[in-house]
Length: 445
Image 1 (cartoon, rainbow, N blue to C red):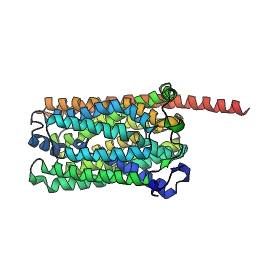
Image 2: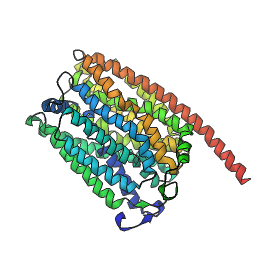
Image 3: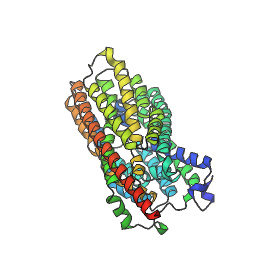
């Protein structure tokens, strides 16, 4: 399995154990490599404390500050998504994996020392480059390389299951670190956590260097040279554009579900320790079941888009109910259960979004470029949603229930639009599939 000791290898010649190891490696890596940038999803209050204690933020603007940092990361990501897909189609997956992991680990260690606000902005821009431009393009391509086309929906679901398992275990471990050091001041808990995360990510870099092979045939053009025709092939494909729009609105409400952390803290007044555990389960744990389940259903129905559409409708209803849930202590555990159920649906839907590309028969040779374009549009909410929701929360600090009512209604609207886009893609993909079959029959005749 030590891939550094061999030359190019066709993916079909890899042993089952090697394929499984690579699937697990890229899956847990996708869970861990983004953790430093998105710490506020689970550690909202501890991160606020660290930023205030370090002087990078004040009590009055800390939510907006966290949104601004994520905004810097997200704008960098937006710029890098399409190039990352092109890079993934023309640079070895192995190279991008170990370089992306290693450079992200170094930035994470720097982040642990909580420098000034503007240095933090630079760090988040840097992480946008290392995790997106360098690493992101291989996330789906490596799964595609070790999968048969008909098995991709299933394998991407399994991949998100391992994503959830890694995130859940790491989340509990992270929560233990933060809780253990809670009385050591505002900075120490998060600093220790970031140092540990950096070490784990560096370990992934070493594993990638030694075990990811140089795949034979991983480039569409000879020698991996860039072809304008490949980009044109992607840009002219309506399936790619509809998939991108679907992902945009799915990702909007998928990430928005994480606002339930602040809701449980500020509105329901649930104990911080319970909120940390619920946040870890919601963010990672539900993926253990939801992503494989949604992937299996999508494979059974042979239409990920239909599953995404139905799931988005369910999410819209749940978010609308959440918006009007009375803020009383007696309903605190109802809120906890609803947060986990919403996360289950959102994780499952998000986990199979890239399967829309295989549903629409996007070739493997341009799969990285297609996922790059998908990401440019699909992850655009990262550039404004955190700042938007942060400003809503800051503007209603005296009445947080009002802020979260607005936020959850916005998310419900996004889920409705996601359903419309998904059903539209299912219709287009079905028509395109019929056309391809007719052409193939004509050629045989």
